[in-house]
Length: 397
Image 1 (cartoon, helix red, strand yellow):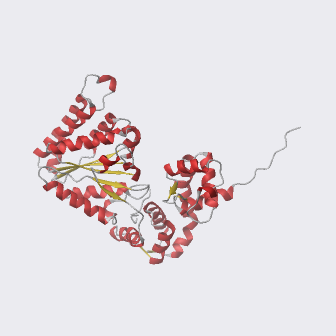
Image 2 (image 1 turned 120 degrees about the horizontal axis):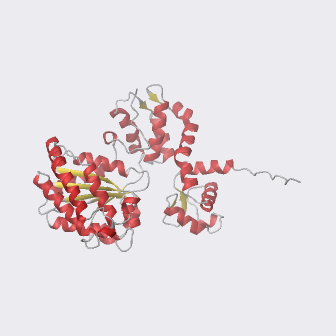
């Protein structure tokens, strides 16, 4: 059975990740500089961008690159809303993920640290108060200090085993920013102090662009990172993301340039939609080439699958009834950029702001709004077309 290298539900396999060359290069250089700097001056990285632009996939690719150096320790930390309610829950998540996702290129070092360091370090962090309920640590140190002490102890053992740089990858840090904004300032303080003491921890974080727009903390927090904003793919990047995974996976399937251009124009270079369409086209291809005929034969299926797997959730679950009215009204207006005055819905300005915060609508610098993607706009038009007046039923006499 041929291997399908595309999946819209999972991060891209690092072996098939072929774009974002500038960010990957910057990460490699940051690792080299941070390894050689004495005293430590880790070059922390922040990767921001909109939903579906591949932040997590990029983080996984950067992790693979880091692990090519036997002197680098990595821990990938997937953050969730429940793990970022306060700094204690955040610290416990980091502790658990360091243990779970521990990786190194040296098998002997892996065995040694797993057998001696990680279990003991976990027990010690629990004894110090990480993950313990607030009612049980009234007389304990600040959880910030406890977290810092735990990382300091971790560094001692890593350094003693030949590790020169510890890379902590915090995916979706915006959950901490949303639930506990002061945690960003605490995080900066902890890792600044650790570096001053010779503990070489480098942070790689991901989140939306709004991560650096929290007024009280934006400026000092932003200065702590080298920032990289991900955008949509251009035509060449779209071609790479389609053709190279097919080649690298040895699938035996190719795709015509006309199909690549059609996918680019329909998706506007949005990585998620590119992978969604290619996953379906690959599964539908019976020969050795995905042709324009393959695309045409599957247009309806692509639209139905996008509606079921993505757009119905965006429309019915993420938007209120009034917000849905705004979205449908916008879909009927020709063009992409819509002035608020053209949206003939009560309280449209307020609702547009809410929809922007939810990522369903995008505002440009001129105060105009657009639906976040043309494919979603097509879905909205289809939902509007399906609405029919329900005939009145006479009351029983």
